[in-house]
Amino acid sequence: MEKDEEEGEGEEHEEDDTPKPDFKPPPVIPKEDNHTGANKKLFFVCNEPGKAWTKLPPVTPAQIVCARQIKKFFTGRLDAPIISYPPFPGNEINYLRAQIARISAGTQISPLGFYQFDEEEEEEEEEGARDTFIENPDYEGIPVKDLVDPSLANWVHHAQHILPQGRCSWFNPIQPQEDDFEDEEDEEEREEPDEPEPEVGPPVLTPISEDVEIESTPPWTARLSSTLVPQYAIAMMQSNLWPGAYAFGTEKKFENVYIGSGHKYLPDNYSPPPPPPVEEEFPSGPEITEAEDPTPEEEAALRAAQREAMEAAEDLEDVEEDDDDDE
Image (tube, rainbow, N blue to C red; front, side, top):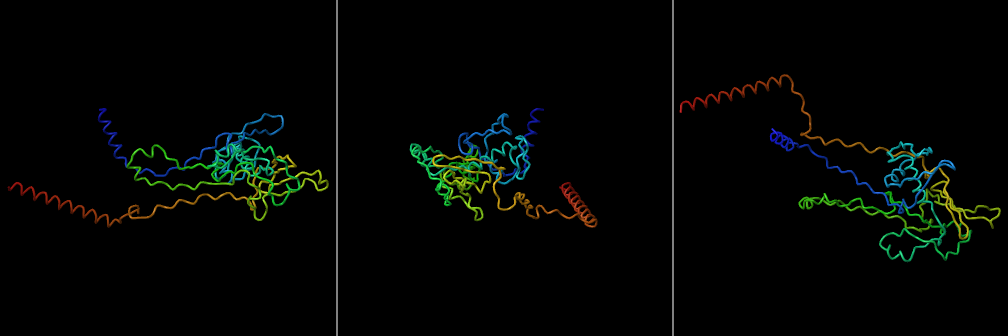
């Protein structure tokens, strides 16, 4: 009985000709390690002074990519769900971390020459983009009047740029897997996918004068903190791309601060992205076209033809039997 059951199961397995889909979901882009890229720093938040601090989790590329497509106001509850389209992969704590990463990458600036690349690490990082720097011990400071120069040539970005992929360092999503090369014949027949073009962004310590304008509006506005007592004024840089982001400096000191709603400036009103287009119908053909039901007359004619064919077959069998008997 056991053998019969095994044979029956084997036959059922062999007869299963159900087509299998060839679709494979896109590979998941891994998050950057701690102390690197968008996760270079840790952040702690609290709603009111004196309350407990909450550590924010590392940010993932998927969260940054989705945060660029939505616009949600913060409620102050870290466990609040983010209901949006496209669906955001996480709660408000993850959305807050993604916005902090975006704001930091776009608004953390410092006076030109305050930071410099380490000469010892420069040789090791010749192949890739340099992402580490040190404070320049020989920095002599820049006069305030030069820091507010409209050319914006005396300020640089000291935070890494976030690529469209959601990472600061590009990750190749096409990685060979061991399962793909088990059979040599399959390896020869398989077509290799096109190698994606690596994403490249501006390097660290790029002047803010190279930032893209927003419909003829400069990305930064430079001004003095006071025109009444200019001898005691400090330089102030206001971001027009992220309202609420400021940098201020004087001589050898500078600092960055952000007081805003966490939203990027949009020249037009926000409009959620449209849903993807509807899938196309399967191409029509005779193999999938549904046949029309026959009329009663056609059914009667078919039965009569089948009956005549059966009678003719029976007569032919009778004739063959009579011939056999005669022999």
